[in-house]
Length: 108
Image (cartoon, rainbow, N blue to C red; front, side):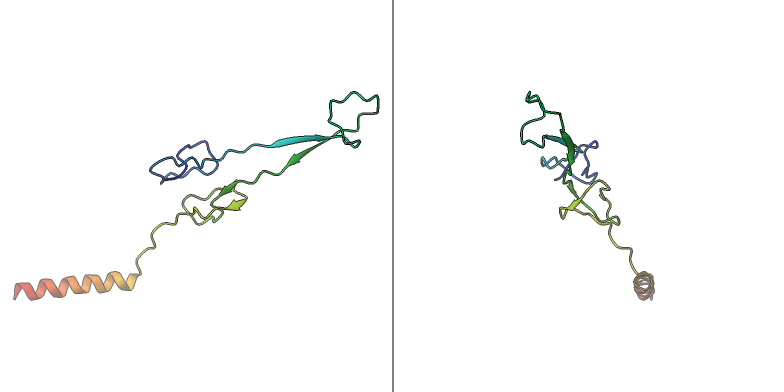
C-alpha cells in the first residue's frame, strides 16, 4: 500500500494499492497588512501589504539510497524502501562448494 499516483511527490512504484497518502507540491500565499486587516480592506491608508510564502511540509522518503527517495520531501515519514542487499562473494563461493560436494557424493 502507498501512493500509486506518478504525479505525486511521494509516488511509490512498489506500492500495490493506493492508501490515500499521495502528496502534491502546493505553495500557500498569505497576505498580511501591517494594520492587522486583510489585504483588500478599503481603509484609505497606504497599502503596505506583504505577501509571504509559507513553507509546505512534504512527507516522504528523504534517504537518497532508497528506491522510493523523494527529493521534494522535507520530512521523513518512515516510508523508505531499500533494495535487497547483494550477497557477499564468500557466501556465493561457499554455496557453490556445497553444491559441488553434494553432486560428487551422489555420483559415487
